[in-house]
Image (cartoon, rainbow, N blue to C red; front, side, top):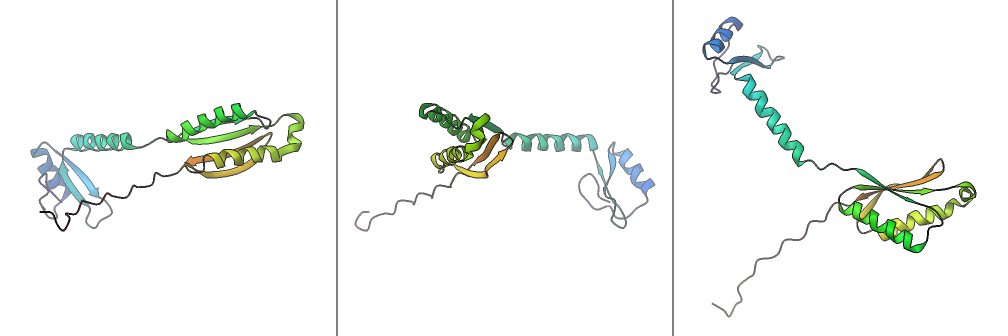
Amino acid sequence: MTGADNEQLGIMPTKDALHMAMEQHLDLVEVAPKAKPPVCRIMDFGKYRYEQQKREKEAKKKQKVITIKEVKLRPNIEQHDFEVKLKNALRFVQEGNKVKVTIMFRGREMSHQELGRELLHRVAEQLKDLVAIERDAKLEGKNMIMILAPKAPAKAPKAKAKEPRGGEQ
């Protein structure tokens, strides 16, 4: 058993430990129940829970939530429209989101799936420096889908400190 100041109090009956905790107006908390004998600690449990929640909240703030944004295209898209959709996909990637590129087929367009696959590869080729293909082009029903994820930013090499020249003092 350990006290409120982290000092070792040794092995003692539960009744005595509870009595000690009540005298100090603190709680008796079982830290390691599976140990032989079980390890307990005298502490303010409310304060401990509060600090734990505060740490969890702080850790949650530092997390980056990645969402999947979608860009929908058609197999017979014009060049300017393609560029606008590509610019949107680029913006999504730069924000740190994944991009789901969808080619929607209608009617007879289903017989020319190679056009959709070409279009998806064109998107991947244009963004190849910024993205990694997480899931390659795959037909799901009447839609062909590819998922792109942003590449991890490369760490810049550290600048070398200026070294004094031999002739100067």
